[in-house]
Length: 227
Image 1 (cartoon, rainbow, N blue to C red):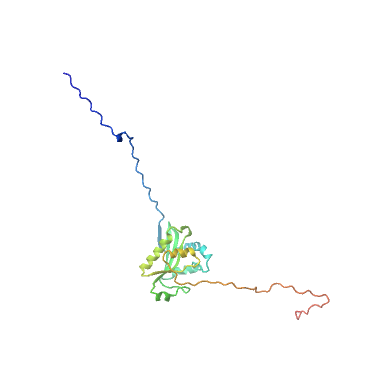
Image 2: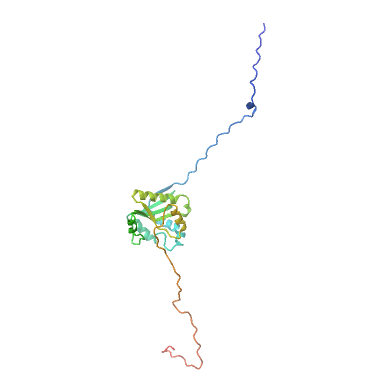
């Protein structure tokens, strides 16, 4: 007796989805790693830093000093060296990879014989200031957050020492610095304005003058009388 063959199972019904071409999923895109920027560090200035900090200040204030009456940095390297020896003054260096990108100098009280500060002004107003004597940023690092970090450090120092204001001096025609400070809530307290008025001057020595010609019939002048 012959075996009965079982017919093959019919193929499953096709669907519209099966008729579409298969899409092979693309490999997931890798997120780009965030670029790591330079790291800025702050430390106290040492004696061995005096020479290179002085060179840094000359470079940082070169353009400003050319346009202002009063130097925006210490008057001499000798004076700058003396400041390092004074008590109550903080000198901070801000560095990136060992290079100086900013310098800040501040004091907790009025110091120096040539200081412009009147302490009574602040006492009457219950102001306990941290006096910012210098704040300089390397020209190549403007607009990169260096100044903001330095200012944050100064605010931190003031808070640590129980002081409630930062006080500094800036030339009135240094518009870039003025705008930068105003954006950070600095307000004008008082000002000594340098003023100049033109003066008509005359030379100390009289100009050359033509003398009258000597007549041939006249005798030579008496040398003793000078005539």
